[in-house]
Image (cartoon, rainbow, N blue to C red; front, side):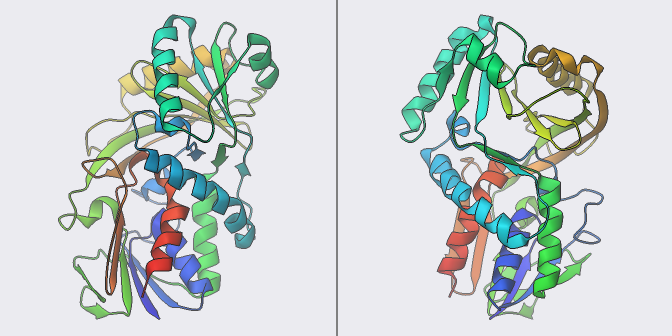
Length: 336
């Protein structure tokens, strides 16, 4: 089949690569200058890459957990098929709370346990927590979430573009798709088209951008093995280890489509929270910060709309890396 894809973010790259490997002819349209990271990159670049189907159930639909576990089955296999270096670790994750936040932590635990029939967070004794992560501050409450993972988004986005090239994907860059209809992108005909433009899909979908901010810290000597999530009263604060002594800290969640640099408030709150968890970060260096917009629908749930000749996927919100493989597999399976 001749396939057209509007959008070269994570969904677009996964679709393009999987479809091209299946011998379809694939053309991807995107306003960016190229599939590499550049100005105003796709939201998939601006993520810590936590794959946390259990932890994300706090305030989310059980659908997020179901799709997330499906994706965790797919990611190792698909990364092996990419045959390119992408850092991926599936050692579980840790959820932490300060002792003074015990009541809110217990409420979080109850909500997650009520939503998760598969993997309940396992409480950790202080000695167990320090054995798993010796660098964390003493006195923290901790839970281990088995099976959760983390991926390096920038490496994965680059690998998908490279693998797409190898499979014959055609990238039509600096092309902002204006009109998507069944079998057509801006009047160009295809056997089937996919609209995965995120916020760019307006007005066809009631999607909005939710601002997120992250920091990359260079922290030589700070040994961190697991992704950490701090139950913070204002933010979903997480710390994710990456190769070369990098720790990614995020992420604010602001109802705004402002793409300007990270705010002073976010800098103080997120990095102070991170330092309270890992005191050794005091001498880390901030080497990078960025903002981006997560595409969200009114119900904060992903949507897959299918009709002859057209599939729309949108609304992955803060769960892009967690949900994308499962949604891509579903969409390709339903394509006619």
